[in-house]
Length: 298
Image 1 (cartoon, rainbow, N blue to C red):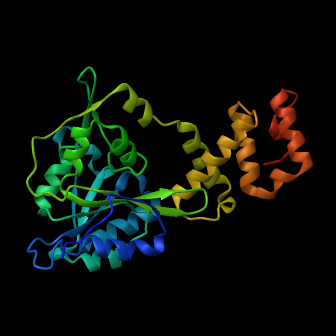
Image 2: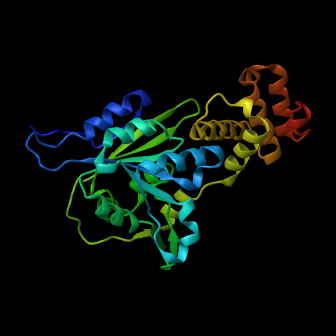
């Protein structure tokens, strides 16, 4: 009997992810000789401090290979992505060690029947993209914020080629309150067609550009007011900051100083949003009478 899987699965509860990954690891047919295996993509560039020391220690008992192998970028290897696999294809050990829903460390879970070295070479061919003038750029396709954009907006030939050897690609999706996971179904192929290069069209380029302000504000808040956050997940924290920024902009705040004060005030006390004095302070800031920080010592 053939195993059927949905092409797309969105916002999966973290508690279900382990079971769904195990479903993806089942052979397609009862008599199939092709065995899918599990791999983790870990972006070392976004893991810092004590957590990085812990991750490097835990990697010692697994097979890990940098995706960036161009000698011209040797100094960037330690800040790039690693494809991590269990020794002797021990998928259970990989799941048990890292935890299925550990989005703070895992950028993606990949299930594929392709041999590990062939899969590594395939992913390495996606490390670079080209603009309309054929200028080459490093592409962090494994970033959970970038992968779904590429899947949605990149040229269909590139999308089909890139996901062709994967049975499934799972990536974390953060909301302001929790981390969930989404699944992209691949082609599950062993034999690939011609390598496709990704061209950054104007639409795709605009979609991939990110505003640095939320990241700077989150970094400031984490360092100065760590108690303001309930979640340890970076993605959830970022989503919370971005959500508050969007709300502040909708209320008419348009300077970084006012938006910073707005976000920090509501991170400290979400109930403040309903207080008459707070609403008046926001209105006065929008009208330009006084900066929002004058009303609350943050």
